[in-house]
Every structure is written in structure tokens, then in C-alpha cells.
Amino acid sequence: MSFFSVEQITAGYHGKTVINNISFQVESKRIVGILGCNGSGKTTLLKAICNLIPHEGNCYLDNKNLNRLHAKELAQVCSYIPQRSGIDIDISLMDVVCMGFNSRLGLLQQPTKEMRMQALQALEKVGLGEKADENYRNLSEGQKQLCIVARTMVSHSKLLILDEPESALDIHHRHKIMALFRNMVKEENACAIVTLHDPNLALQVCDKLILLKDGSISRMIEPKTDSLKEMESALSALYGTVSLVSCKDQFGKNHLVVLNQVEDHLCNR
Image (cartoon, rainbow, N blue to C red; front, side, top):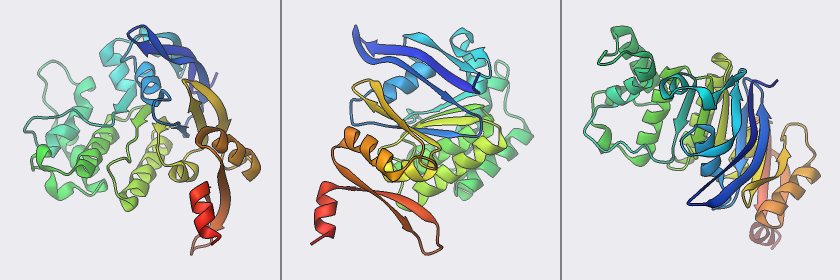
């Protein structure tokens, strides 16, 4: 059995099915991206995996059925980063990051000195170390997202569930945050499932891509091994006709770039 597996997940809201009979597997130390147009069911799938909404089917992490874990047990192995943190109180960045230890603390138990040191180190890694004692509410949306990433880092979770973690970030921090997640899954022998809007970023950072359309998996692609023609066909079925090209950056590293019809037309003028 794979490190993490999703088996026949079906879920929705108010009697309406949003995702239907979804199954896939993820190996440890891997990042799986989920691409899909708005309304395709990406966030619903993540919430079902995290047991945040009622669903049919099961998810197994290292042979453990996540559906059978109590909330605190689930929080010890699974970290979920939503599109918005939902934190709307006056609280320091340090205290936000220390929330990552909550599942390992007893009732009314406070984070230890060692935990607070780890929290500060995590904030430094995301570039917010100097703001540790500042009010979280005063941060920009991008800085808030980086703070939540630091909270995830101290949790040492085996399963990272990330809903568009790059959406509020500029291009530099988008790549920085994904590099941090890449290091996390390797160091913790974990895996990550991430929804992304940008197919170019997804092709660069993900080991496998799940293409979600109308609540079901239309295709799966692996950027490192699949041919350009195969991937171009799969992405075109999702987004409409696109071109996929391989190019080198200034350091000689290959990158895949998705061009839509409008961009193709402009480039050929």
C-alpha cells in the first residue's frame, strides 16, 4: 500500500454531489498538485480528506484510516492550510505559530521554551523572525500566509493539505514557499497535496498532477516522465487548447511553460 491513499471519496453540500468517486495514491516525500477550473471541486476534495465535511470513502495514511481518528489524533498527523486562516483576533505571530503544537499539548498546557524556540526558527525561515511579537492582524495577506506556513512547519505532520497556499504571494515568495514544502516532506518523510491555480508553478514543483474536472479526475500526469504531447493534451482538455513548451533558464535548468491561445497568437505576431 502507498504511503497515502484516497479511496473512492464522494462528497458535496446540501444534497448536491461536488466530487464523485475519487481515488489516488501518494508516495512519501512527494508533492501531488491538484489543478482544476473554478468550481471543479478542489477545495471540497481537500476538506473531505481532512474529515472537515461528511463524505463517503476512506483515506489511509501509513496504513491508518484517517476517518477513524479522533480530531486530536488527526491533527497530530495532518496539517491543513486553507485559503484564508480565519484568525481574526489580536494575537502575536509567535502565538499563531505555537498553535502548531496544540495537538501535542494537554488541556491548558502552555508551549515549552523549546517549542517557542522552534516557532521562532520557523518564523525566521519564512522571513518573519523580526515580527514574532507583532500583531498577526496587522500583516498583509501574503505575510499571514507565510505565518501559517511557519505554524505548519512546527507541527511535523506526515500529511500536508494545502489549499492554494501561494494565492496571496508574489512570484518570489510563491517559489520560496513551495521550496519550503519540498524540504518539509523530505525531512519529515511526509507527503503533500496542494491545490494550485497556476499550472506553470504546478509543473515545476509537483511530482504528480491530478486534473480535476466536474468533480472527477480527468487525467493524471507526471511532469518529470510524461511526454510534452501527453501533458499538452491533458491540460488542453482541462483549460481549452494550450501549448506546452520546454525552455531553459539562465542557469541551464529546464522548465515547462504553458501558453494559452491568446499568448501563442501574441508571441507569433
